[in-house]
Image (cartoon, rainbow over all chains, first blue to last red):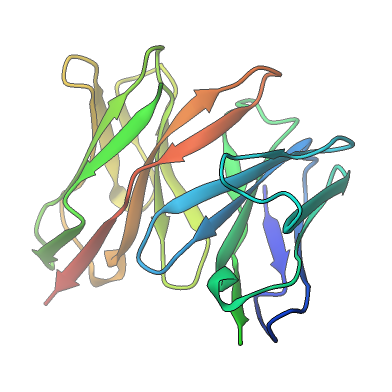
Length: 118
Length: 116
């Protein structure tokens, strides 16, 4: 159990276009989802915390108008990279917290989405 | 404030040798600590977690970690390395926020190489 999926797994887009990444909890409900960014050979950096039905909380230095997050249901959060530029190329990973789990500290991670902006 | 320091960005061991990946934490409250493994181009998989129960925690794939409060450490070990253990390993501490949810603070990661 506790499976999180991401779609797409990889995407290539042209500079100036927007890209949407989906994060789904497949077998549990997640009131909270997290979006991370990972540059090559580096650690995960939390971008924002997404709560179902409310606005996302962004980490310092993350542009909320560029990285739009929507958490419309208990099983789906989306990250839209608007007007993408080559420097936005990265590996984006989401995680979800299991609302019904015994331990509410555990996060389940998606497989990641590799974004390349040309 | 919580933080995590992983000593050694790269560790190389021989197949069959002991694996030791170091993690030290800083926390003003009793921490929840985690070890995750990441294979290339994949997400993170939980190896084990410490949540204030037994100080010696056993995880998947033969890994274990011991919480030592006096040393503020949570080192990851495995008695005998396999080639399949080659991956990136992240230590993380859970930061509790208002509203009842947490966020994870990750260490910089340690790349484990296993050679024949």
